[in-house]
Image 1 (cartoon, helix red, strand yellow):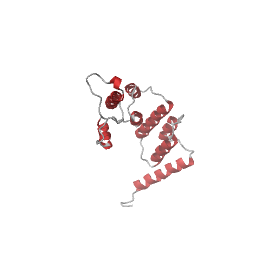
Image 2 (cartoon, helix red, strand yellow):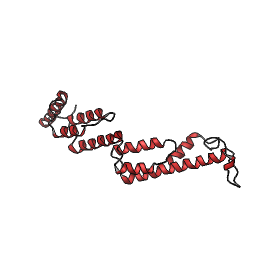
Image 3 (cartoon, one colour):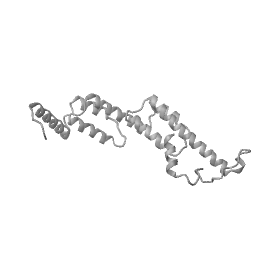
Image 4 (spheres, helix red, strand yellow):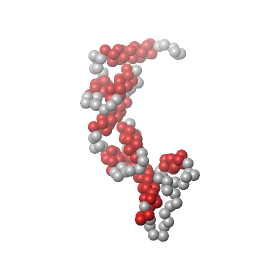
Length: 190
């Protein structure tokens, strides 16, 4: 184990064991941090909430969590519950919803879920979501430009005057010698 055993370290270990025992017994939840956790978890129904509570309890028993860190975890659980309930009243989610109206590009739902997860984790502000929403808009514009090319190529009646229809007829409108990995790379830049 290394190091010296001191009276202070023995007291810390004894306190850790007492907290573990209190959790195991499930009777004494008089600690202020456990009471905050208990109050916050009333009515949680999202998938995985029980595990989230167990993680917080375990970290509390180890003496790792402070009141501030437990409050952050509780806020995260509440945001997760909001998504589960379909409550999109938070300003960040409203900005995200407004920005993603009408998106049809491949993987836009994945991008949306990714941003929602960042919001749940507390990693997103209204300003940062605007930047991410602009990135998603660029992806949509790229998708729209490719979709428009495909319509022109497959519908001779829609070909604008004096502009020949593209020779490439593949659904992606990419020349056959362009590797798919290059297209995927280009999409990540948008």
